[in-house]
Amino acid sequence: MITHIVCFKLKDPTPENIVTTRDLLLSMEGKIDELRHLEAGADVIRSERSYDIALVTRFDSLDALQAYQVHPYHAGTVIPHMKSVCSAIVAVDYAS
Image (cartoon, rainbow, N blue to C red; front, side, top):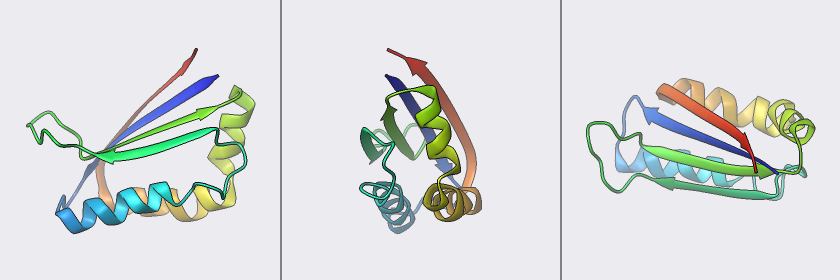
């Protein structure tokens, strides 16, 4: 199992922008067959070191993660939105 965690810092972290962006991430559910687990949530601490939204996804293999990365919905809808609204994005991928 491969876990893919991504944290997003928004350029304009208004409550509306956070909800819209989180909902877009969650909209991948049911659209990308390789996804075995999907969750996204907004930071509740709001400290100086916090990012605004976290995404946690799980895949059966590295090949499945790679297929997700280039999937038309992820690559054509989600990634362009995230790049346009984020000031920073960090990720960690690990096998379990």
